[in-house]
Length: 367
Ligand SMILES: [Zn+2]
Ligand SMILES: [Zn+2]
Image (cartoon, rainbow, N blue to C red; front, top):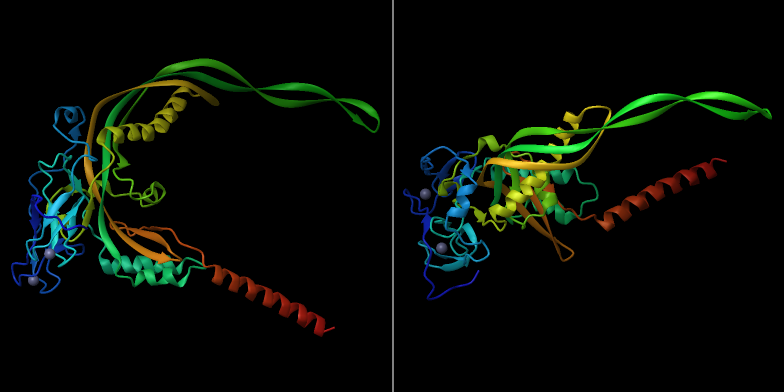
C-alpha cells in the first residue's frame, strides 16, 4: 500500500451508511448491504439483466489491454481522504475500513459478468475452520489459533468459464479379445506331461469416426495467487447460482484482478475438455480395448465469461513460514496447508514407547 500524490484517482463506488454515516458492506447471511454499526440494511442494486455468455470471437474486436499492462487503481477514500494504490478490483480502505469498488468500465480489463456472492458468514466460516482444525492430528497450536485470528480476508477470485460445441474426428484401433487353447508340457514326478491352458489374445482393427459434445461452464482459474492444488480442492462451485455482477456484492471484500488472459484460459479449458473427448472416442470405438492415435477437434460457438468466486482466506505464521487456509464461501469446504507439529508427534511417539515399556515392565515383574 503506497501513498500516491499527483496521480489521478480512478473512479470507485463508495458505500456510506445512509442512517449513521458509517459504512455498509455486503452481508453474506442477509444478502444485502448492511451497516455493522447501526444494523441499517440496504438492498443490493437490481441487476440490469440476466447473466450472459459472451461470444469468444468478440474479444478480438474489443479494445483491451493485457492485464499485466493495466496500471494499479488509485483509490482516494471518500471517507478519510487516504489515497492508496492497488491492483485489486475492490478493497477496504486500510485506514478507515471503508469499502471501495473500482469502476471496471474503461479500465482496459474484461469486466466481470457474474459473481457468486458470499453466502457463508464470517461466523459460519469460523465454525468450518474449527471442524477442520479439530480433524487435523498433530497440528501445532498456531493452527488451532487460526480459528480465532482476525487475519481472515474475504476475497473474490477471478475465474473464467467456457462453453463450446466440439466436433472431433479421431483415428485409432479397436481391440477385440479372443481366447486360444495353448498346449504346453510340464514335468511331474520326473515325467513329461502335456497340458492345455486358455490364453487371451487381442485382434486389432482400424477404427475412425467423429464424436460431438456440448461443454458447459468449463472452469479455469483466472489468477495464480492461489495454488492450483488448493483451488481444485475448493471445487465444486455451484455455478448455476451465479448472478449478474453488481459492484455492491464486492463491498467490504478484496477482489483480485485476473492475470490469466481469456485467450490463455481457453487453451487451458481445451486441456480440460481433451480427456472427456478422448473418453468419448473410446466409447465410440467400442470393442474390449481401444487405441486412440489422433484426435482433431473443431470448437464452435465458443463463449466465455468472467466470474468472481468467494473465498475466505486465513493466514497464519508458523516457524517463519506463512500457511494459508481457504474456505469456499458458498459450500464451506475447507482447504489448507498445515504444518505437522514435531513436538506433538515426538510426544505421541514417546507416550507410545512409554506404554510399550510399561507393558514390558509389567510382564517382567509378573514373572
Ligand atoms: Zn449505519
Ligand atoms: Zn478511508
